[in-house]
Amino acid sequence: MGYEVAINKAWSDLANLSQSKQLSVKFLADEYSIDLENKKVLSLSCNAAAKDFTAILVLHYLLKKIKGLPGPTGEWLTFRELSGVEGYTAAFRSRSIEPIIRKYGKNPKGIFSVLERIPGDRAKDSDFGVILEAFQGVPALIKIFAADDEFGADANIYFDRSVKEIFCTEDIVVLAGIVAGQV
Image (cartoon, rainbow, N blue to C red; front, side, top):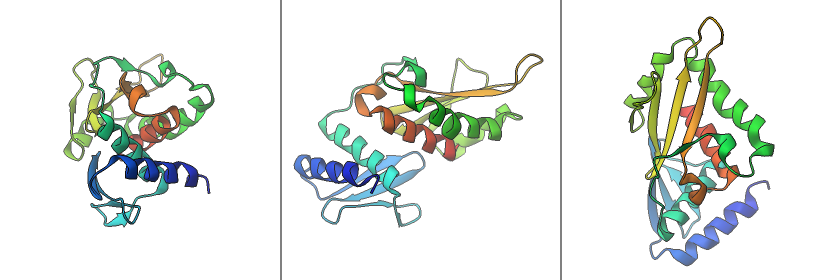
C-alpha cells in the first residue's frame, strides 16, 4: 500500500487536467504510454506495466508538463542543495551515487557509453561527465571524479534548479536512483 495514495491522487489529478485519454512520455531510453481510462502506465520498450515508483514519477512529470514546465535555468544543484533532503541523504547516496562509483570508478571514461542509449551530451565543464535528458526539460548531470593519490573515485548527480518546481524531494530521490540504474 506504500504507493497507493500517491498513485491514486496522481491519476485523479491527471483525469481532471487532460483532455486526452491516451498520452505518452519519454523517460530516459524508454517511452511510456499512459492510459487514463484504465489507469495504466506501460513501458513501450518491454511492453510491461511500469513499476509503481516509476509510474508515479511519470504521472507527476506529466501533470507538471500539462500545467507548464519551467525552463531549465542552467544552474546545477547537488542533492544537498535541495530543500527538505535531510532524511534522504543516505538513501540518495546508496541508491544513486554508490552504484555509479561501482560501475565507473575504475574506468571514468566508461560513462560516455551511456550516450549510445540515452539522449544527452558530454558535459563541457567535466573530464568525465554527461548531461542526460531524463525527461524532456529535466536534465541530469552525472560527473565521475577519477581516483588519484589522495582520494578514491567519486561521483555526483546534479539537477537543474528547475527540478524543484517539477518534483518533490521524494520524487527526486527516485529519479536519481532510476538514472543511476540506467547509466
